[in-house]
Length: 401
Ligand code: PA5
Image 1: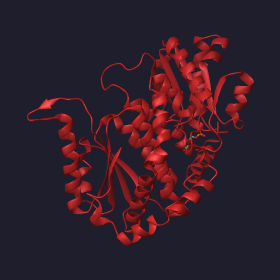
Image 2: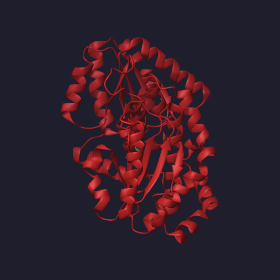
Image 3: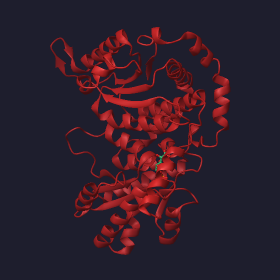
Image 4: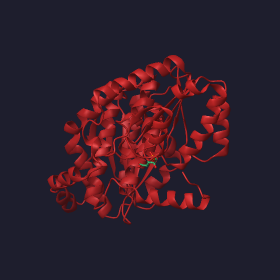
């Protein structure tokens, strides 16, 4: 990863605020390590668990043409980001297709999902740390009935894999009662920080992503990018204190669309509390330059951008250049144009898109948002707002799970 936090940023950064924040590094790190929910800071998965994930992934690849993952929020977006970014645009992907359910209450989605699985050989991975999330429970109940129509009870038992808390929640009880195979999301890791647990790694492995390389990148990132992660957190908070209210994550590669979604959850849920926080939004450029680009150039002066681009692409010669080089030049030109008005940019360049680099990227942002939340004066690891809406919905639906 390469970082340019100056070319399109410098003149917008209040040096006094920024330098004061920079000085707080040690205090911020100490605060971070005192939080309970930081199991993800160091390698959060054992060698044995990785082996088990690989074995089950192999079994699924041999036996199933469909792997249905039921999860939402942090139990969904990490692996969805990985699966999407390593998916082919047009061709069929891995032998075992990985699809998602439990991500909405859309009757047409559920209806089509149930029809789609009808004639497929399927394994199901239910992922819920609490075991009580409504969308997941509803989807699981419906899918379970479908499975019983397709397979006998013994076979259904083999085809359901549960990823949940070690001891608590209804899913853990179900595992104990029915004897399903299961994985654990450690108690000290929250959903949006769970990419390096079986919640993220099993779907990734089934899809064929090299999880060893991903883990190597993830584990390297702390030492390699600690200072940069802190620097980025200071820049965000300096801009926030100067009145910026929105951080727009921009990618120049369509297959990173769900990385944007993952980032929005990570930043929005970690910082949007106590009446504070930058609102994370996202764009896929160059597509959105022809729509939201207008706002970024000349709308309210409340937005800064964090650009993620990939240096190494396919070589497609075009006139005297090649398409990927053109994409890089475009990203610089756009940042320069936005900078001329009032929209500064951080530029993050990935040398290439592979599992090791993405392990680094994900850890980098998880560390940054933790520093950033502490600088902002919030607890980056709770999500009482999400819990609040869940209670209200269950009450109004009279839904007891
Ligand atoms: O990051 C979070 O904590 C949330 O997005 C949760 O992951 C989400 O609400 C799903 O919760 P659970 O895994 O308990 O079903």
